[in-house]
Length: 300
Ligand SMILES: CC(C)(COP(=O)(O)OP(=O)(O)OC[C@H]1O[C@@H](n2cnc3c(N)ncnc32)[C@H](O)[C@@H]1OP(=O)(O)O)[C@@H](O)C(=O)NCCC(=O)NCCS
Image 1: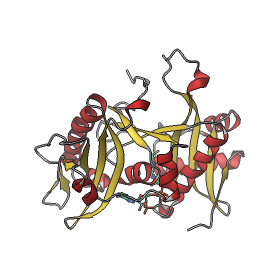
Image 2: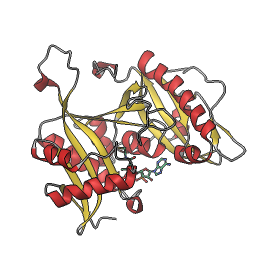
Image 3: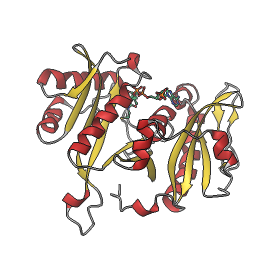
């Protein structure tokens, strides 16, 4: 689908439409970024890009300038990055490439500003977002945050938890250029397995036909490992709360340890049919990106 244009949103009416789309998606007043804040962002170096089909706003992405590592002895200017705060697409247009196009427009905006890094956080249990962020866009994940938005009542918190993976998108890197130009061929699950990556936690299936976390988790046997997540965590949230909690505990336990303590980074994501089921796997690589591991803001 390409009958839409992507451009910066500036007028009050356009920014009202961004507020309205957030209400539709999150349905929670504590989560909506209100029009006055959007106006401030749009007029002070932030970026609010909209995908418009005629007059209709079908998607948006909001970002602002931020800095990396405030405790560094380098001035903020040396650490400028773009922080991608929020993206949403109207439900009926999802899965047709609008989100991807919005991210590419955001990348162009960053490059025009001389910025090389865009960061954002996403729930590591949401396969759709992992596929877009890691596989299609070429972002990497080197930091796991426990309860990034706390554990209280909010649309950003599910079952008292808001764990997030930090996506780092090094927009001018070879890796990203190759991904978005299609010059990098996508490796399959089998190719990773043949390359010595073991599946740390092959899932089982519940009586309701939902994926269940492995009881035993293997250790990585090489510098590459595969970590499985459900392909549709929302379906589990909606039908089996206990299982959804078990998935959070399981993925937190493994990903937090491997990423924050043992030096693995998320470098790829695979989603597809495997052994007759829809399956999703993070690819974790040891030390591949350690040279750009930088100090992070603490959430404490
Ligand atoms: C996240 C969001 C903005 C993505 O927008 P979108 O227009 O649907 O994104 P795209 O169509 O460009 O990309 C989605 C990709 O995920 C794939 N996908 C869909 N379901 C999937 C699943 N269960 N597992 C893995 N990939 C999946 C799609 O097939 C598509 O990939 P493809 O182009 O290779 O086929 C949109 O889903 C949304 O508004 N979600 C609610 C708000 C939200 O979660 N925002 C992000 C956090 S702020």
